[in-house]
Length: 265
Image (tube, rainbow, N blue to C red; front, side, top):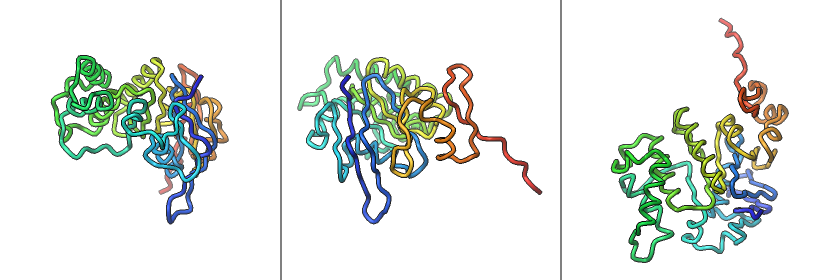
């Protein structure tokens, strides 16, 4: 099976910093959810920005559908790849529907006219993200979680083959976090490839086909949740305050905080 994206021997370093990202070959395939996890400063966002073509690595190559990402124009990239960054903002206070309509720009003609197919995709994107009833609301009137879902609907309107998400559930409550990952699961079942950066290890373990565990710009482990979330790896990353158990329904690795020590008066 051909990969949707491949990062080959990526090396990147920021100016005036000793920190560097140094990774071997990483691939993402159709129908796969790749959870990218690790502590703050481990390189998760940098990796995702390189994969999205926003940041060019000092060494190595990023291939999108077997083409060099740096040689592709942004309109072509947007037909294949949807990217949802950690910081969501818009220069103008669009309505939700207008924002989602703009997601169709890679597919419309130079005149910018939307046809029946475009309108169907827009409606489906609003419904998939649970934003249909808020379609006329302006972005400034949305909660953080609603804004995340509005921008996701815009990205889905691109009809990409590949979805890159940077901490998309950070502003969502538990109910919407689970619904969000179930949506990702349904998209993967339709052969979309998804890479998601998240600090919610348990949701990543439950819904991801593979996990990429980063530490200080390096790949500590890459594989199934069982292969990555070992006691040794968890202790290495999170210390001794974390207890590992199995999910009662799926058996997937689940992390819990250990019982707090008694506070001395």
